[in-house]
Image 1 (cartoon, rainbow, N blue to C red):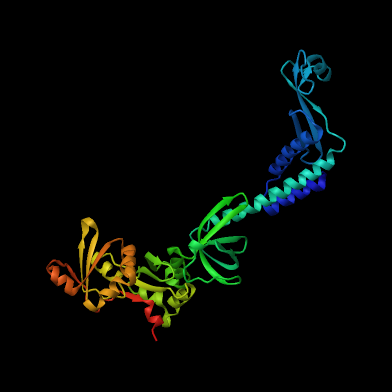
Image 2 (cartoon, rainbow, N blue to C red; image 1 turned 180 degrees about the vertical axis):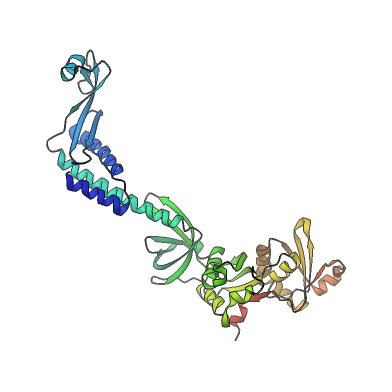
Length: 372
């Protein structure tokens, strides 16, 4: 190694952010192993690389004793005093033992260490870049697909989209451009592994942030999201500005904003719900697209009883209970849904506390996007 090598390390420090001294310490440690392996040496050696010249020196370290038992480990006091009259028993003497052809081994070892450190530094940069973006959205191109996952090129690395994180409606193939949610970033022996998701509720939230400037700017707030990926989602929104309609902002002119989200999610239906701090109104809105007649709130148990017209009961419950299930996830309330006839038979009308006005919709379903 020489001056040019040291200059190259300084350049690496500037370009890759790898500390020069850290690199040299790693090279010195590797050279100790190389020296022992090639020259059958005892373990007490030290390697030193000149920080300016790049010259490599190997020193054997021996302890000063009265009678040496092992010539590789010990040195007599008399011999040590001949070298330096200041040595005393118990001191450590360093004797240079640099082999003639050690430069070749040093150069080869240094190359391996530097290559490894560069790889580690690049992995660390990628890890920190993506770990800071956890819970964010990323664009990528599908590279390959197997029975367990799809592998997506996201620029600096390849992200993994497990089968369990793919939507049932996804039919991914190489070359497809997709958006995905960064679920987690893990350190592995092969470098950072970025795991992305297409089913996470956060993906829906991030897509609306991309499409709706009012959400990005903080004028409209997403209060909660409930999702059954690939089939139906509910998103509750609230406007901090009374002059801004949160549902209208999310829908956009001619439905373009919500349509862009629906298209990205392969036709997943989306109910946009107006959030309310009034529990009865909030629960009533959450059952969209069904119209709710009355709502009763039982605070201690966080149970809500919703009454809907007879012809709307199946719509309120949804296919296999999907609409009711999503409404419960969205609001955090357990919702018991009854038709008007059922409520009358059970004598519930007398105990209801709120009437939902027919014109007070407070919701919008993307079902209308699919209507002929």
